[in-house]
Each structure stands twice: as structure tokens, then as C-alpha cells.
Image (cartoon, rainbow, N blue to C red; front, side):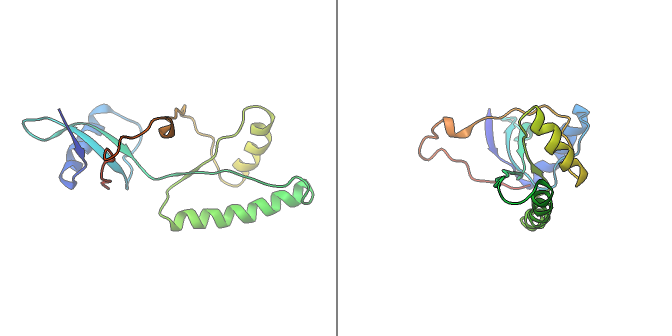
Amino acid sequence: MTIRPFEPQDLQTLERLHAEMGLDYALPEKFFSLVLTNERTDEPEQALLFRPTAELYHLMSHQAGTPSERWEKFQALHEQMRRFAAGLGLSDVHVWLQPGALEKRFGARLKSIGWEKAEWISYVFDLSREAVPHGARAKASCG
């Protein structure tokens, strides 16, 4: 088994694998990837693709203005964040809301300015909990 960074000539094979799996989403336009290849042919058999995205954290003072004033200020800040993130080449931004009252109230407000509630269940792997051995970091490869 060989695991190596993505190479441009792998794209056609990754597109074929994606189509064969019948997944209901498109491959990302920009991504980083590691591929597991067939040792005889060097053709990818599996790949893990990851694309740049952002996680949004919202901090504010509840003493600064009325709720409607704070919402108006948030919308202005949101618009600048949207432009900034797009300028960085990001295609989306994620925010996780605590289930319950916060998600119901603030989630409705986010929907009113174009956010969508994700249908997919999210899992996270905390990279900070495991030490990466010195010299074990892979070179980044972008598709």
C-alpha cells in the first residue's frame, strides 16, 4: 500500500471513483488530498479530500444596545465577514449553535440573511489531541 499526495493526473480517477459511488454532491473545486494507490499501477484506489473552510465564532456584549441594534450591527459585521471570507477563496463558513433556545432564536435570524441549516450530521476529529511525530507532517497538495 502506498499513500502519497494528490497529483494532477489523479483527478480523472478521483472523478470516476466519485461517480461510481453515486454520491449526491459534487467534488470540491479546490481541495487538498492524500491518495492510497495500487502498488502496481500507482492509480488511486481511495482518497481523502479536504477543502478549506472556516468556522465562525460570534462574540458580543449583551450590554451594547438593544437586541434590534445588536442584530443590525451583527448584519453589518456579517456582510464584511462574507466579503472577507470570499476574498480568502473560501466557499463557505460554518457556525455551530448550541441546541435549544439559542439555536431556535439565532438560527431563525441566520436563515433570514441567507444561512442554511446543514442536513448532514457532523463529526469532528480533534487534531490537537494527538501529537504529530517530528518530521511526519505531509506536504500539502492542492487539486
